[in-house]
Length: 231
Image 1 (cartoon, one colour):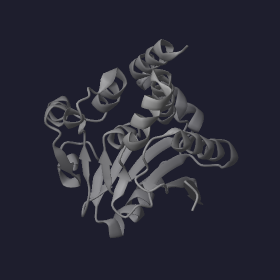
Image 2 (spheres, helix red, strand yellow; image 1 turned 45 degrees about the vertical axis):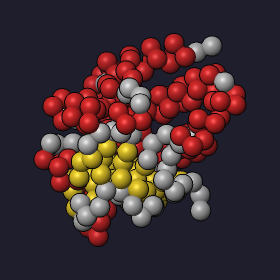
Image 3 (cartoon, one colour; image 1 turned 120 degrees about the horizontal axis):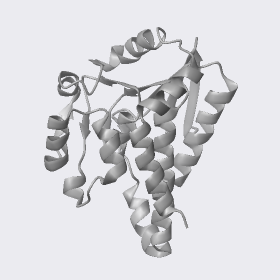
Image 4 (tube, helix red, strand yellow; image 1 turned 60 degrees about the vertical axis):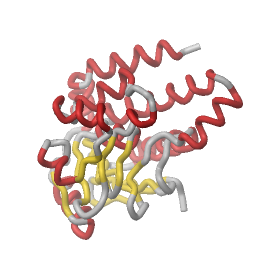
């Protein structure tokens, strides 16, 4: 199975992440960019829906089992390269020239949660899965980029609890706090997501311009981080 694939339904591109827990590493970013390139330039899509083929996980974020040993072996420059690719990927999602919808078909932890927050809308299955920021228990701060991305999607009072305690929020709790637009049983999730997506056949060029204006502060934070990481 390909790491990513997609299919078209009218003007909606449904992208499936197929790499198990969909953890972030260099092959993940490379393949994701490639399929985004294809959807952006070779289809007439005006909406992007991102789901997972894993039965219970949407994305578990950074591939720590790979990253730790890799940095130990190759040194801090590899970590800088990883952060550069990760922040560039988040920036692309934030500014992608069509409406983006995260169809959260399972757990979204850490980087997986941040990736969902970089989408324009979020739906989630109600029968299984949590959204969680476990960095407090991993011994790491969120950093400027992920702070900014999270605050665009999560109310401050909920964000502080998530950040300081590592609490796991169910889909219904996330709907209550307007982190998600809607939650549905997995049996109905994609039908409901597509029903919403098909109402959103908007001008991609204008959507991109709006995103550049709306996310100006976040983009500036990301660009500053990328500049600080450049050799």
